[in-house]
Image (cartoon, rainbow, N blue to C red):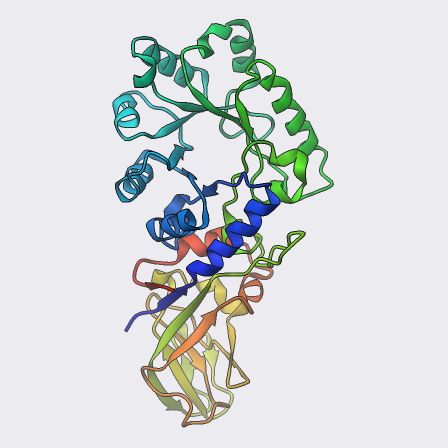
Length: 364
């Protein structure tokens, strides 16, 4: 028996629609890392139904997988990692959009496009670093471009983009500083659209939405701590429930050591359920701290270590007839995700992307 992830595509579509409304109809979608572990192709198709026509992924392999699923030339796929040597024809032949992150990539793109007809050139996004210090043209590279403007003339530019470093902190002065740097650079390319805001950039207000927003975690309705995101018009919702099977139930006497190393000992005659999910499925050992679950109105806590394939739940207080082997219990849903993550050195992004391939994903 395997864990099951019940994923509501309608909830994801509803979340995106709310984000799009807050973006004045300008929202794309970031679905890298297999849509944060929930299924890139399934979620992309659902979002297309909702009206999304622009997607961002992490690397070329993800983009090729998505393009194989979504062949329409009306759907744009942009790639964060950059534009590497030898990939030119792959981008061109698969209608993919590289994000140009440094001067070497810009020169390579320009050289390729110079020798190709306009309709055979590669369309691209120019990424400038306005304060994230991760990807994007540095200040020195921007100075070079300002002095050599012709290097921009041979490419069909879809957007100028940058990435907010502190969008979750509405009072942080760096947000406006980054916005102003981007607007200043854009004077060099006045006819090219601008994209800056991620999910929390949208919440900063209309001035940050510009020509396109790029929500990622917002598709799943929660912030990094698992709290539901509230927009002006709507509270977003977490779109899945994680279920795990009971693979064995046993009665254990008082004073018995439990699991590897006997880290816990029963303090009463106990009924224990072994749950068929473990750290190989993304249910990491330190989640034990917050892993207590309400079953039939009774709190049940983990006893012993979380292991590779299972953990043990104390179900002593549950009516014997209520739980049986092969019964599924709910581990995570919209009601408890923030409690699972509270006071841990893990954020929702990590939690979602850690959910393993053994977990069956079901869509409704």
